[in-house]
Image (cartoon, rainbow, N blue to C red; front, side, top):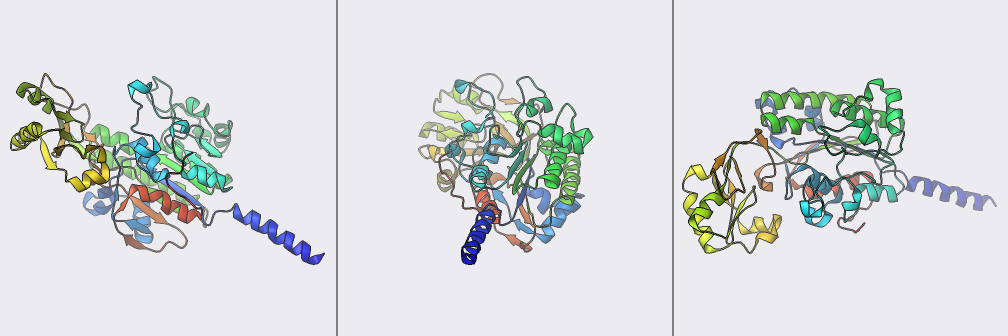
Length: 406
């Protein structure tokens, strides 16, 4: 009888322990935080004591190479699925007009399982705050990135309508009375994370901080304005770290790098004037589909006004965009340039903002930092953004296989 009780007790303990993470993980994504903000932080004079501490005490990658397109929603989805946008289904921030337009708000658009799915199936407690493509996600505590058509920002009432559990906003407001303001921002997102860390302690918590991206678009990356917002972001990270339980790992990462730009060059205007029909502008590259278009680009490349930069080698095309392998030549824009799509009118136009991403993935790097118990200080090699999901799943102690259908 005593033996049977012992066996039953061990079985209960095994079942209970199987639903515990090897190490709970808090993931903080700082949108658009280029690796150069960290590697050049002294030269930039950045006052980021919390990020500097994580760099000093934790594992810090030499840089994270993104996927095409290097924009927020596809990249954040790659972070938690480990696969290319063409495989996970989130192809841009906004859906094509032929598919109805609008944002990819719902996980119903996802073709493969994410870390949230795997953790949830393993019996772990999950949470997500302002993470793209998480409406309806396998998240026990969820304030998804969601806004209604016409909103100038992320309206808390709209987010609340998609929250899980439905009263999550009221719960957070009970601890932090200033939370229930009209528009969500990084301060309120940080408050939501602090609430969950204090009360629910999810095994996996995803937090997306977005204000740096907006500032870098408006005024350009590495400008005083962008540096100030990044320093404010560091302050918020510091407040969150104060509430992180001692057994947690903290992963700080980003989705893409950033560049300054000052002009959009419409090579299609010249191609149209010359009668060249096989030249395609994709913005982040210009594609020559035959020898005639390639000859034109080689000629125009000699004149800086056309903004034609490096020719992308075939091995990179194979790695990042195999659908372009049949092209005769593919060129990146020069620094400060984006390729416009116009085929008539002005050759050059001025952009409405001063910062841009969506460029070829090798052009800049995102960030990966991991810190916490058992994570020794080290500098690790450059990695792909597709490797991040596996790193987080290893910390969690869950088996994750990228590309498994939902």
